[in-house]
Length: 267
Image (cartoon, rainbow, N blue to C red; front, side, top):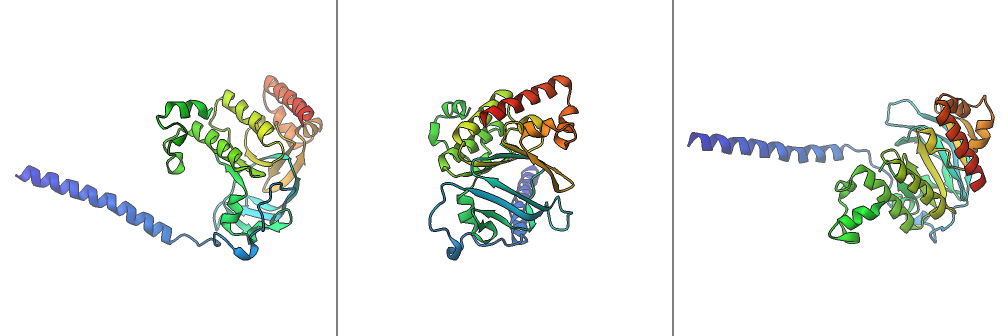
């Protein structure tokens, strides 16, 4: 009798602890800073732009969180339709001073729903094998955050979603960090073929992931130091980009140079 009572008490204690997690999450959500509304009908575009001809950052500063130092400081650059620009730095979440324009429209004045609907994002994540392995095939339910997919499977899933969305702006945050070389090549080829007319911006930290682009932006101390085609930057031995490549072993450096030359012919 005493044993049963103790077991019941332990179970109830565990249940209370589990329920308190939900309370903690509700309290955490209540403390979040409110963001701008999902839709501002006064500034809603009359039609969905199928071709983004100009993408401009004007004196943009970013930080990870409030009270932390800026990691981007008054960054300005201009990208035209169809360019594939990779920048060697880190992604940020808190925008302290924003002026990002797409075709002359300040995105800070758009509702979040309108903005997100017109931009495809591939975060840090051959879906064919995954689909075939699932009893539901293409009708398989993807759980929140892709928790029922592996890290390597989430990225191709996001890539497929971006293709189906037909948006003309694609943002990629280290999209090939957790994939094997075959999947890496698949993603790079897909970007070249399926997003040829799209503007693509990619956050990257590894050199070989930025060679397959029209331009590379090198940031240091939160500021844009270089912005040019990979092949052009490599020709300047004094450039930061060229020095980074020379720090690799001879075989890797030669391979990166070859990729840059090939990409120059492709674009």
